[in-house]
Image 1: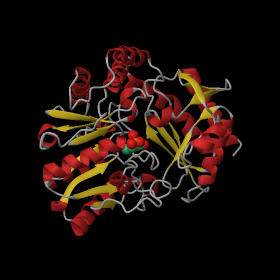
Image 2 (image 1 turned 45 degrees about the horizontal axis):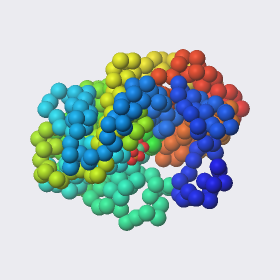
Image 3 (image 1 turned 60 degrees about the vertical axis):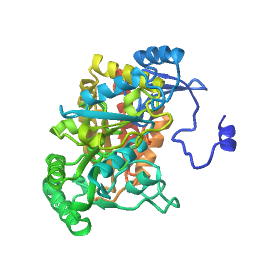
Image 4 (image 1 turned 180 degrees about the vertical axis):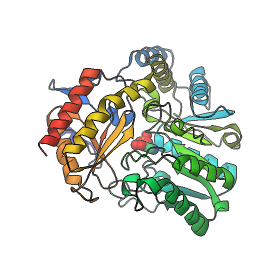
Amino acid sequence: MFERRQRTVARGLSHVLPVFISAAGGGVLIDVDGNSLIDFGSGIAVTSVGNSAELVVSRVTEQVAQFTHTCFMVAPYEGYVEVCEQLNRLTPGDHDKRSALFNSGAEAVENAVKIARHATGRDAIVVFDHAYHGRTNLTMAMTAKNMPYKEGFGPFAGEVYRMPMAYPFRWPGGPARCAQEALSVITSLIHAQVGEENVAAVVIEPVQGEGGFIVPPDGFLPGLAAYCRESGIVFIADEVQSGFCRTGDWFACDHEGVVPDLVATAKGIAGGLPLAGVTGRAELMDSVHPGGLGGTYGGNPVACAAALGAIDTMEKEDLPAAARAIEAAMLPRLTKLAQTVPAIGDVRGRGAMLALELVRPGTLEPDAAAAAKVSRACHSAGMIVLTCGTYGNVLRLLPPLVIGESLLSEGIGILEEAFARL
Ligand SMILES: Cc1ncc(COP(=O)(O)O)c(C=O)c1O
């Protein structure tokens, strides 16, 4: 199978593990040779409700037997409207909202930007160091890291301005001063280099994903949202990775009661089927003329059925609480591990979105080789962990929210052993 893959699939698609999966569920992937792998990746933060979750399977099965596609722009169906109702109800804030559905996180982010530009009549988009927003032309421009996401793929879309990120572990003035100093630098750079009156939107991941699971310090997001409000700038939260219960709240913005003007969602929303959404203030969303938004497959009925099953699961099984329980089980062990392993510079994250940043002991110098070595050791011991970070030195832990206690504990044990052999 691997040889066939090498002969037929483009080289640009890499893989974390040289395996082929034949079944998955309960936090375990089974490969075609019968090996079991503990899943601490959830298909990059997607299968939060588990793989083949019961309610996802039943809703999808029912829908697929009824009809698979009409195109919502041609002949609408109820599932699309129901998903929008759920998004309007669950995303932060109780103001009047509207939603539109798409296929991927990148598409959701692009559409949020389109809506913000249309509503404000402004062009500039502000993004941050370490940001990841996708692989389309505009979202590549918004993504910070060059290799592998942008190298050789330019020229990129214009009017995208990058600001420093409030990154407590690496903030020159130290974590205690990070929120206030970052806000002050960002607002003065926007004023001097872009002009507030030209900025359509500030786009931020409330907990950064691919860039290194960077959790901004308390006060930073509320301060940024307030600044946007005062300046007539649309505040867009990219909750593609952090949303849908992953961080212990329905959305990462809920942690500090931040209410974004627009929210981009995808990944965890539909139990593994491709679906994404933009949800936001009715007056912004409805500023776009009929026909200005859409796409052939966006909000496909089967993907909508999956989302309704996934959301039902999240509510019935209280998955925000499950994510907090995962944090309660993992964080003390990771913190203890950091006390014995000098290469672990920082332990961070919220809920079931946790990470270890590896450095050369006693310095801030990133150690990507150590992260690769630990992740390889986990892989050979039968566990999937992923790395991330601008410097490739962060191990990120993303178990499905429905993972059982003993499997979770076994997984952490594998990680501890991998570090013991570092
Ligand atoms: C925060 C964030 N935004 C956008 C995207 C892009 O989503 P997709 O890969 O579905 O296009 C990702 C994917 O990792 C993400 O983490």
